Length: 158
Image (cartoon, rainbow, N blue to C red; front, side, top):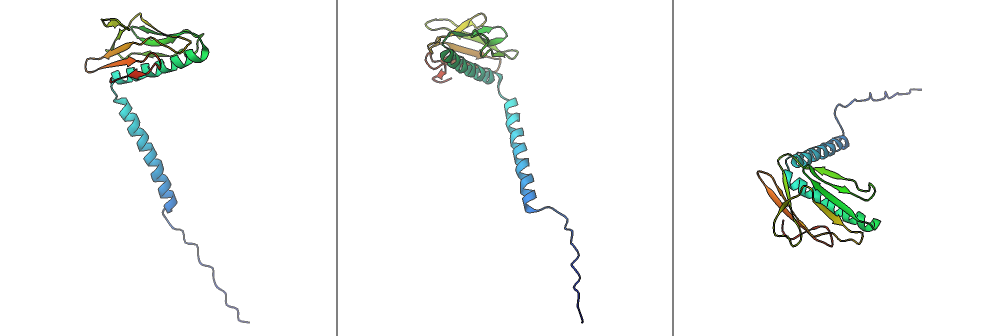
């Protein structure tokens, strides 16, 4: 019996990566680069815009919390920034203004802007707040925000 034996092919070890591995790495790199660009952009944001955005968010959250809990809550302004007071510690958030930023308030039916320091902005348990205007100023920029009494959100052009 003549039996021919076929030798098994030696395993070929290929150097390199599969297409799936390359695509996975590229996807991860794109995600990391995208996050880095987003964070880099937010680092360069204007201090005035950031402070205004923080006040808008805090006003909306405070109005919502006052309505849900059914009792009055207040945002207190001082030299260093603003924060929520009242509500037995609920939503006790605060924001510290960056150096060089000035904040003024124009109350409903008032004629003159006043420094925000020492002022209170009240949100009732019925879902209403005092309509106020807030002006944020730095040496290089300014922003005015006009808040709606019913929604606690900005109205009109800023």
